[in-house]
Length: 91
Image 1 (tube, one colour):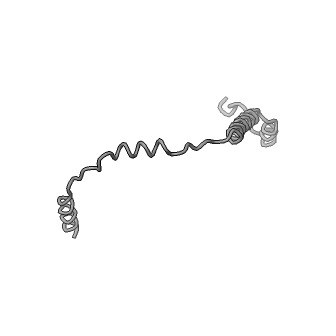
Image 2 (tube, one colour; image 1 turned 90 degrees about the vertical axis):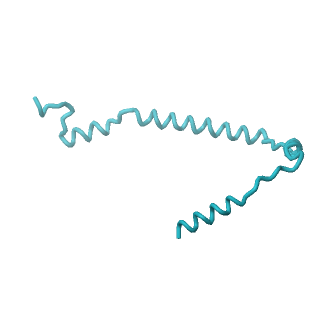
Image 3 (cartoon, helix red, strand yellow; image 1 turned 90 degrees about the horizontal axis):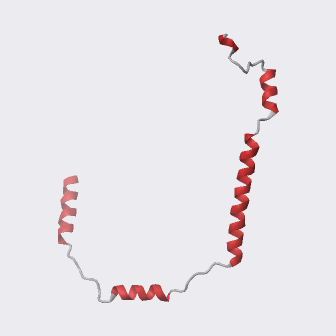
């Protein structure tokens, strides 16, 4: 079954012929690109996008700095569970 499909595809591909592009096709495409109107973004949208990126950056820095500070709650938890901060087990 698979060999039949392979031979069918091979025979179909063998029947394909090369065709030439219409004359001046490239110049027509270039002309359409030139005549397309440019899409301009308003200054308000640019400012809104910039401000949102700056706010996101500030929030990320604030979160990273807040999490990097050691909380005294962690020390209280260690003391309440009687965990030793050193390796006194091996001394």
